[in-house]
Length: 619
Image (cartoon, rainbow, N blue to C red; front, side):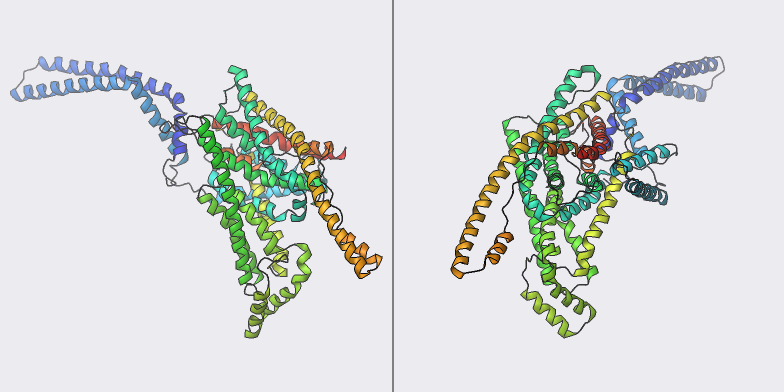
């Protein structure tokens, strides 16, 4: 539908307003019924007066016509009165009135522009205040207040001020949020994580991001569903489908919120806990989104949840996950081939521009075919960082080709271009030193960080703006159950999969060290045959030190529990839950409750857990 039409969500929201307008319509019907006999009495009085006067033929004809009209009106009034008092008719008219109310509130604003100067000014002012608050938090080292929490507070204050401005509000666009604001955040996280550290800690990261997310979803859903039943009349009962959906969306750990807390404490990508939390939050988002989109299909009254439906959902989950990864890898490979072919033909500015164009292509391809754009953009980000940006150890080997870039960019002679093309054809298509020039490589990380920080700041400010919206159905018990289930599920997942990860990491390191010893033994025989000096043998052994296993001790497990912050992704997913459609029977009747539960969990994890993480690390 166009911007001036009523979409499905608004029509469904209108149905929720029927009870509010039913009493008003009843009063109107009563007044109409009272006025009908009075009008009939007036007509009868006029007829009595007319009978006492001498009447001509024309007057008699007119009176007969008036009497017929009066009788028709009376009959029509009786039919209309019967129709208006019919319960089905009252419900239909109430529905229409509700739809018109929602239409006038949200759509019928011919003089109102969503991108007016006033609205843009408010958005820029809120983001500017958020940036100032984040700078003050860092400058004064306010450890108990995370930067994300500061942005939420700014949004809350902005929403409170706007509530006093008549006919002024900022609507939340879920599609814009998920398709425009989230991709830069995820791509920056995939680009900035150190790939060597990620590879070394891959076992615990993969276990926590996949199996941990699935178990967390199940535990959260079980607690929310069972406890809401036990509470009875204290709160609404959360069905199994809605409970599973809430468990999936709340299991998504926000990488930006986590990084802002860990970075403020001086941790880097060389620390095990930093890499594990960052890597888990990165992959965990993709798994949670695929799981969420799979479970949304169960919001259907006509769907029978049996073994066949569960099997179909499982197949859909793996198809979406694997297919999205393949799309990301394919787009990353194509972008690498593009930079290999165009090496020396682009200025650093165009290199950076094309880099960001290629980065978002996999997201919209996967999202367009109803797969996971987040998973696709993460996979593409890994490939582009490895083979386009290049790793740190390859910068020296790439300097010669960067010099060629500078020659070509500074001259348009045929010889320079020919020399560049000659070097291009000699280069590997997938080199570890990358294809970007020195100047472009130095700006890629900074520009991606700016985009991600801007979007992340706007998201948390949005969360504060809509925190006390009338579309949220707040219930203390449901909010408490949501927070409690999130904490318990995290407490269950961390120790179980921490122990499994330690066992698998130790087994993997033993295998790698066995291969390492075989290489050293072979090298030792070769050295003895060639009579190398002892110093050279020591140098060879130092180049390949023994591989130590990644061990997650109890202290790290406590930090993992505290660092499980929820944020932008959970907020985006809950906004994309479809409202219940009375015609198709699809959607959720409890979306306002789920939105309030999600917001309460985000607030608790960001303010309480995020503020306490630094103090836990000190102990």
